[in-house]
Amino acid sequence: DAKTTQPPSMDCAEGRAANLPCNHSTISGNEYVYWYRQIHSQGPQYIIHGLKNNETNEMASLIITEDRKSSTLILPHATLRDTAVYYCIVDMRFGAGTRLTVKP
Amino acid sequence: EAGVTQSPTHLIKTRGQQATLRCSPISGHTSVYWYQQALGLGLQFLLWYDEGEERNRGNFPPRFSGRQFPNYSSELNVNALELEDSALYLCASSLPRDSRPDTQYFGPGTRLTVL
Image (cartoon, rainbow over all chains, first blue to last red; front, side, top):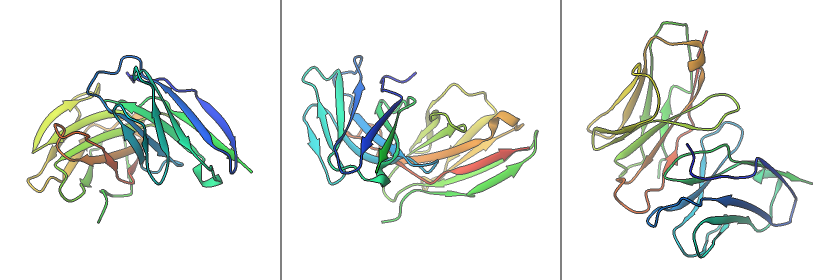
């Protein structure tokens, strides 16, 4: 069973920030939070990971709450090509993810 | 740097046959993971190999098996194929699991169709 819960779907306007939430209340102290996305049955693409501190790379930012029980993936300027299923993962157990649809 | 590769891209079999799927990890990665993704569903963990040993397996019957070779490539074998085995089979590789973080990188998958 997945150790994370995510909303099943979200919409975002093109050019706006997409904020994808994830709850992981049972996360252990040494477990990382990983984010992947999957576009139309391709292999999942790694986005970002974090342990305690907020992280940023060329794709996204990851905000982790101080108690580590939840996190938010931020795509700062969503494009149509960001439409995908986004998975928040702990201990490599995949849930159903959030289907993000970016609309023009 | 080459990513994870999988072969074949597509595989069509009939019920009762055996299927063999192959995966080559990223150079320097010693861990290989296999996942099954049925149409429209999430990824289900199948098997994890590291340094040639099976480290963990998901909730799948014994007819799902595999191995890892000395060069860290891996095979997934599915015996006595059933219709519900039709799925996308994904392979991922990572540095050794005890390294932190152990980010997994995925291949493009093998689409298995059982008729």
